[in-house]
Amino acid sequence: MLYAILCYHSEEQVCAWSREREADTMARLAVVQRKLAAAGRLGPVARLMPTSAATTLRKDREPPLVVDGPFAETKEQLLGFYIVECTGLEQALETARELGEANPGGSYEIRPVALFNPVSGTE
Amino acid sequence: MSAPEWIDAALVSARPQAVAALLRYFRDLDVAEEAFQDACLRALRNWPRKGPPRDPVAWLIFVGRNAALDLVRRRRRQQELPPEEALSDLSDTESELVQRLDEADFRDDLLRLLFVCCHPGLQPAQQIALALRIVSGLSVQQIARAFLVSEAAMEQRITRAKSRIGTSSVPFEAPSPGERIERLAAVATMLYLLFNEGYSSSGPADIRNHLCGEAIRLTRLLLRLFPGDPEMSGLTALMLLQHSRSAARAGADGNIVLLEEQDRDLWDRAMIEEGLALLDGAVGHARPGPYQVQAAIAALHSRASSARETDWSGIERLYATLERMQPSPVVTLNRSVAVAKVRGPSEALSLIEPLARRLAGYFHFHAIRGAYLRELGREDDAREAFQRAIGLAGSAAEAAHIRQHLDQLVPQPPAASRSGTGAPQSQ
Image 1 (cartoon, chains in turn purple, orange):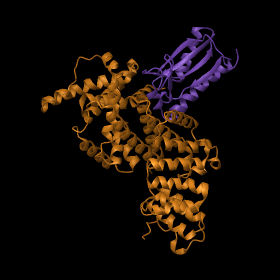
Image 2 (spheres, one colour; image 1 turned 120 degrees about the vertical axis):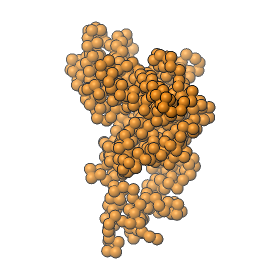
Image 3 (cartoon, helix red, strand yellow; image 1 turned 135 degrees about the vertical axis):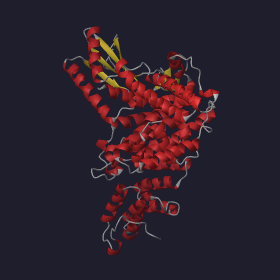
Image 4 (cartoon, chains in turn purple, yellow; image 1 turned 90 degrees about the horizontal axis):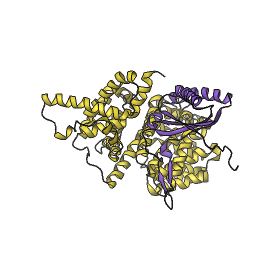
């Protein structure tokens, strides 16, 4: 079963990381990701730009409204996500813990994926 | 990761907002700073045992406020009574405080704190020093290193800046929309000064990078709190695009590597992508401004995979736009560089000759003029221009760079040999 691991963290903190801290964290995460990839469990991985680069389309009205900034003003922001193949919640949590050890701070939201279409244009 | 590292990261990132809120409570920079320091000490004692609080900023404000209230009370017994509003109500709980942090006035706290630092009575260098000390929390020693002055001199500069501001001139009332725009513009100027100090000062590389990083961090934070201001996005984009080249800009010998000669593989792609995305979003507002135009110029350099592929006509047009928005001899000088690329050094030279008087004391004027003269084969004139540039160089790296140009000029008359550090030529 596929799980999405959604990464939430304080953007202010992540943006304040030094280059060394940034490089160390990414290197540690790469180790975990390589392990997942070797096991054939790693799907797409995305790191999002800071929410200062976000734009929101409010489509609950006609015409839709375009506003600068992220959808939700929260203390911690959605900064990225992983798609990982897991046998169940237990393994998903285990994977999230491993990623969390490589990159402490913030939270991971673990959500089972209902539909996954990795290739655009397919039905 | 060791415990102190995550605490340090949390304290550094919480500082601007926490000090800003404490300034609102206490209406005194020194008390607000002391309150934050106190809260940090308590965090270092408590957090390793209890783990991080759910909202570090709120925790620091709450604890800092209580600690400083104690201090104010103690002082009250020794000194005169403080004004009533210096004591906020004591019944707030932390959760109420967290809720309050979401309120719109919290954005104005940060803006106020930054705005206080760009008090019009302060010199630009004082403004930056004050912002680095209070908002970013750099030590006096670090700031002194950045400005190449002694620690004592910097301490004095900051103390003077604080007393110059005084509490009386700090605007505590909520700003009107118009005032808010004015404050944002003043703060943007100060943040760009801070960035430029890091970008072009002659201090050590690590501290210079730190200043650029701080400027970007604070600008991003403001952008997050005040989305929808295209100039703020433009400024953030400009800083990111310029800073993306920092690794390529410093040669192994400490000399400046010019844009055209930089190894573009050393450019930070992530910063460039973010800068381009921000600029893209800003331009969509169709409310152009000087920061967006400068970011667009930087973007044309970033998009060129080699110096040869640079869109110099596009850059020339953008500089012409900037000249209309913000007429200044320095902008014209910069436009001339694009003109030289598109139409040759002769036209570029005639564009800048009328600026000679106004830019007589400007290093880059003489350096650029020297380069045009050399291209035109006027070696003696070029030598004279380069020598004047050396006399005005702001750093050893700048001077060394011009010396390379001088060395390439042949023949060198013995009278104008490279003696000493190159004093300004009298004329």
